[in-house]
Length: 195
Image (cartoon, rainbow, N blue to C red; front, side):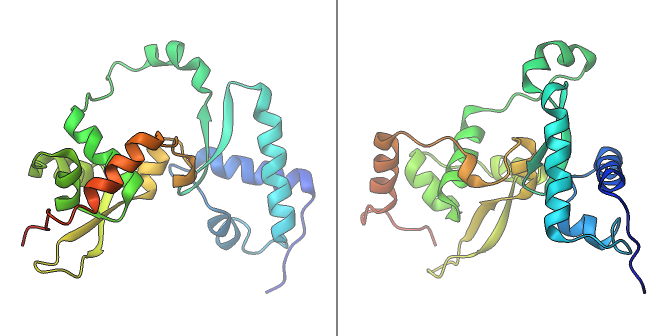
């Protein structure tokens, strides 16, 4: 199968349109394997096209952003006070317990339910883990090799997408005092994993 050639301008237009109409973020690999499968495009040229699109939208109300599962267009966060008026449905309110659990999973993954309880000092209600899994924000990534083999939880690409992060390194840093307190609690030999 021979590869077609297109101009840089056509490549930018094609990628821009594909990302715009796609219901999900698109990765470079997805673009290459589908949209560009019969077009001669080097990785360098693909990167340049994406950079061109990013640059073009720097002065617009939307931006091309890279999130956990690929590239997507999204409105500038500075416009959210006005744009939120378009949506009748309000964002769900999450409990402090749910947010603390999600934070521990995000910062300490993979982590067990017992370790979360050890840090928080209270039992994690089953509905909290269930809600996080239903939202697609966390998943079981394995089991800890201790008696009872508790599930190990980690965040997903959906978590990164929802919070507009391309990777976990974009999470704000924990204050040193909180980090050391969490480490101390997680390594306390008097606390054992429930079996």
